[in-house]
Image (cartoon, helix red, strand yellow):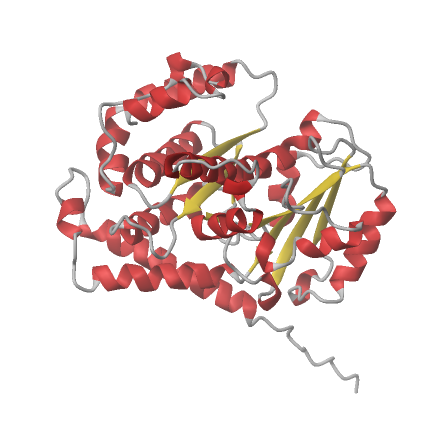
Amino acid sequence: MEEGVLNGLLQSDVGELFNSTELIKDVSGAGNNWATGFHFYGSQYQEQIVDSIRKECELCDCLQSFFILHSMGGGTGSGLGSRTLSLIAENFPDVFRFVIPVYPSADDDVITSPYNTTLAMKQISQYGNCVMPVENQSLTAICQKLGTAKVDNIKHTATEVKEKAFNRMNSFVAKVILDITASARFDGSMNVDINEICMNLVPFPRANYLVPAIAPLYSPKIPQPRNLDAMFSDVFSNSNQLCRVDIRKGTFLSCALLVRGNLQVSDVRRNVDRLSDSTKFIYWNKDGWKTGLCSVPPIKQMYSILSLANNTCIKYTFEELRSRFYKLFSRKAHLHHYLNVDGMDIDQVKCAHESLTDQIAFYDEMDNAKPLHVARPKII
């Protein structure tokens, strides 16, 4: 919403990719307040948002899906972002909605981020068909591993270093979208339709969170995996996850491996069989793998993999968020800023907290699910 931020975007290297007439802006943002973004700006710009989206959709020959990228810690990203998602669901109910929310770090400088994230989570859990959460802390750790600021061996100012880090972090999120949509843009022996991801990876409406991981983590300073099998293993390591979780400790409900490069189907199949021995799938979906193979690799790479894991380990991220939320809510700290916004009341906050708790309980249930042993009837 902030005019200065959008002007900076239009003047950047990627500015020509955007239609400036469809950008919606205001003098200031939502001030780290979900209620301001959702209720105030959401109501004020609702018709303009829907009209802009509809104009862009009319330019499509075949509308496949929507991708909604937004931050969760601030007010504009969480509030107006989740309001935009609900508007898309209302006006385009039959089109799949992929949501990539960027979760704040535990040491985030926005004090009210636990409120904003929890309130936004209720909306994306309800209206997002597939939610691929990304954490700032994981992106920062990957950038530090790759040595973003030292790649060109040139001494940079603090501002330049920060800008380079942000650009690299954004590139990882962009790569998720590029790999998901690769099959729609390039040929492949085993291409995956975008909407097949929702159909195959989301067994229940509430189980719509997919943990993304990418390999290899490309950088001129980091050597590429020595062989293909190492790359498949990397997408299951903690250092390659875009969300700070350990998928080895959770239960898989399903998992997709979207591979790009000059590979054979037998290479993919061999590695899936190898990984199946060390991954725990829920008892009713032991063969819950979805694989895709696009023959065109990313630029400057021989091959790459995007993993989308529907795994119960995401509940630990939610538990940490609930703990941070309760520290504020138990004392009603900063809550008056939200309640002073027209359309906002305490019940919405309580409802969002209940939704988060229900989400955690659901993944607990999936984690502890065991097959029912029904006694065979005896013939007398």
